[in-house]
Length: 158
Length: 248
Image (cartoon, rainbow over all chains, first blue to last red; front, side):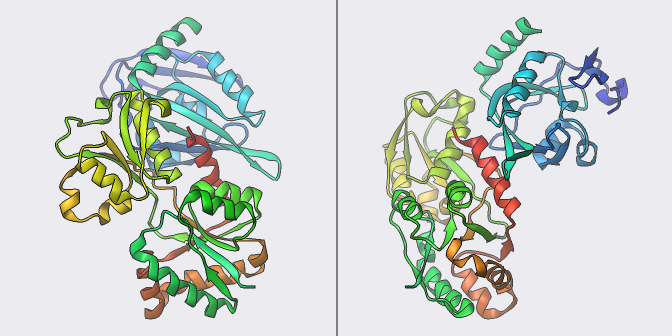
C-alpha cells in the first residue's frame, strides 16, 4: 500500500497525516475536507480474510472508495482508515469479531482522493465448520444526527 | 409418501398455475413423487420447516439460515438476474419527496414479508426512524398495501419491487416511489432437504438446462424466472452472512 500524494487529490489541497496501523505498517495519507454522500438505497459490501485482507468488493464499494477493484483486492481493509477515526473504535471491532460476534459502528472512511464518506457498518464473522474463515462487512447510509453525534464523540477519543 | 415442495409465501400469485406445472415437470424429470403445498403466510411456512415437513423449497433469503445451517438443506439453484429488491412508496400527492422527510410515528402499510420489511426498515434509518418509530398496518398482500396508500390510510408502504412493477398502471399512477433498494445480491433460492440430498446434483443440472428447449423455457416463463443459475454452498453461506448484517 503506497503513500498518498497530492496527485491523488484531483486538484484539491489537503492535510497530511501519518497513520500507524495495528500491524506496525505506516502510511502517509492526505485528507480533503469534502464529504461524498452515501448513495440512497445501496449497500457497500466487502469480504476479507481472517487478517483483514480484502477478498471481495461490490461495485458500490469500488465507486465510493475511489479505488479500482484491482487496487482493493489483496489490500488491507485499513486502506480506508481516516485519521479522524480513533484507534479504540477499530480495536473494539477486532476484539468483537475475532470472538465470532457481530459488530456495528459508525465509521468515517477515507477515499483514494482524500475525501471521506460516513457509513453505518456491520461486520460478521464468516464461520465455516466452526472456524472463522473471514469477515463480511456491509455498510449502509447513516442518519445525519448519528454522524454528527459520532463525529463529536470520536474527536474526544483521538 | 410423496416429497413436499413449497414456495415461499411471497411468490407472485400470477405465477400460481406455473408452479404447479413446474412441479409436474420436476416429478417427471427427477422420477420422484412430489406434492406442491403452498402456505398462506410466513409463519405457517416456518412451522412446516421447523417440523421437518419440507423436502424442497423455493426459499426466501430470510429462511435460508434456518434451512441451511439448522435443517441440513443444500442449495441447488437461484433465478438468474432476479434479485429481491424493495420499494418504499407513498400516495402520489404526499408532500414526502425523500426518505429524510418521513417523521417518527409514521403509519406504514406492510405485509408480513420479513425480507421486504427488513430492507425497507434499513432504508428508513437515514431519517432516524427505527423499528419502534413506525406504526405498522399489517395487510395480507401488496395490493392491499397499495390501496392503503391510495386512500391515504398510511403514510408509506413497504412493497416488493417486482410486485410493484406488476401493479396496474392505474394503481401505480396514484403512488410515488420514494426509494427502491439496489442491493443486487439477495435473492430467493431453491434448496433440497436431507431426504432428497442425493438428488441435488441431478436437480441442479436439470434446472440449469431448462432454458435450452422450448418446453423448459415456457415453464420458466410461467414462474417468472428467466433461467436458473447454480448455487454453491459458499454462495448460500455468503448470502446468509449478508442477511445477518442487515437484521435490525
